[in-house]
Length: 342
Image 1 (cartoon, rainbow, N blue to C red):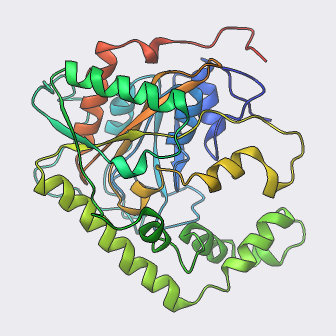
Image 2: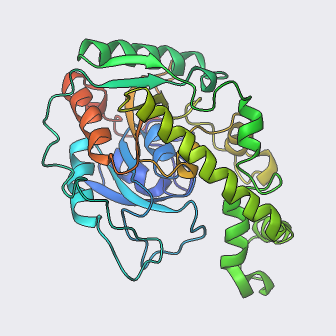
């Protein structure tokens, strides 16, 4: 079982957790991961490394086992934003083998490392206050310190509400297919005949997928309409307020404990994940580039993380902000001790 190298009794994240744990443990210099709702950025948060979910369509998914055309993204995980930029230089670009691949609009960066040393003074980012509720004490404390550190670098930090006064529960409910996550709906379709094979997957996964198959076409199309609306409102919030990006904690809590052979419904990570809706998933719906980076530790010595999300095709700006932050701080330089603590 994959474990968090900062404390072996803790979970390292979700589906790209092995990649993130290996980077954090120093077993590899960098890795690629897959993000359908946070599976690059959540392991980065729990393991104390850096990872970016690029603009949707920037990186080809050809050759990957994908479960959701709407939400899936491939991206780099590494110690630093600079290393992520160097990897993105290699893997980004249009690929005719991927039906979701998109050519960047004219004038947008084709190299993500070339301008990474450019000045960030004068850039404006904004916190979304309505999304900060239910954060663990140490998570929000470290996040507020990050705001101060960014301001000291010359970045202006304000506040914005892309969805206006609409209740978060309401608009995030609209980002589902009648209460079912679109990733589950599209995964059920992708699994196809595997659902009919008795040994093809766990009973829990099969039951989840079979339930998702019952979602109507109308509910799916309504979700896609709402998703495009939310995407536009988040893009408009940046443009209309002269903002370079949004600033949020990556996760509201640190790595939860591992429970041996848990009931999937009672797994601590699943309970935390479902009880406190992950912030990472929002930016899969909006298709905006979103980078997670370490910004300290909680009282148990577990990493915390913050997230910078910029407008579509502004991946280079997100990487530049975090790179400059990492030049001014040392959180990304911390390493778990060896032997790894239990």
